[in-house]
Image (cartoon, rainbow, N blue to C red):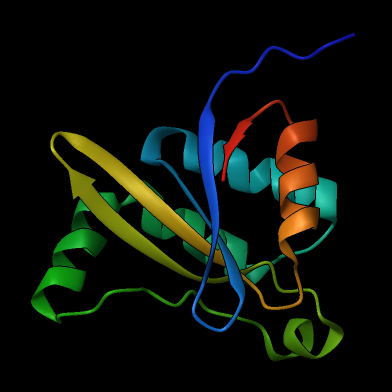
Length: 127
């Protein structure tokens, strides 16, 4: 049974071979939760990322004031040592009237794994 493709997600690699996705802010929280469940990774980093996305305007203005490109979510040291971290950093952006979130995943996750997870979840992956 084929899944209905509901949202488009741009998937690419950034400097240092980190895998990143670009998605609308409105669907990014649901997407993070689903990827967390499928890959069985993430803890405090995912929760802090979701908090930043939920308060998009506050954190976006903080990024602008401090001239930051990315925000780094809190990470639990024991999760880092166990390799249980999902999100390395996030970027909040506004394009026209649209709020966009760039999620940079932990270095332990490769592009094929993220692409497979997104496809299984019914997202249309744009490379």
